[in-house]
Length: 172
Image 1: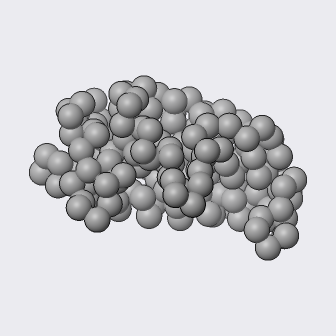
Image 2: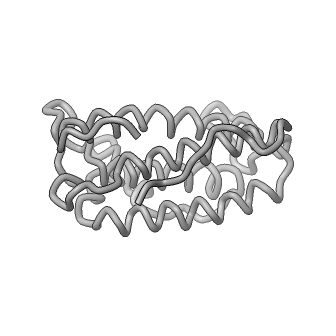
């Protein structure tokens, strides 16, 4: 199966462009994982980055989106492995992901993405986050979407490198 994706929006308004690029970045992350073995999905091929696995990166993307949209934007319930982050274990979502099959992680990520598409559609891009960021400011939904495009795209580069080192697959 090949993940269908496009970076060309159906309309040229700001919302459609932002959500199209986020969906494109999400679909690219999923495409980077297609056809990998269960063993390859949990392999950490970079000696200096023992948590950087395909499973770990998908889990990270999922929980980062949850954090920004559910916790910061909506001031919703803190949930998931990020709740347990500490200075000694700053990325529990990446560490624990190797215990979850990649197809399950991908399904959870895609299910959450569908929910968040509806959330974004129901709010103005100018709507302010209910919870402040570290410096005390309340970012708007536009900023959250731009941040998620950047975050997901940056980690797609990591997924690309890890995938090539795991089984030689390039592209997607």
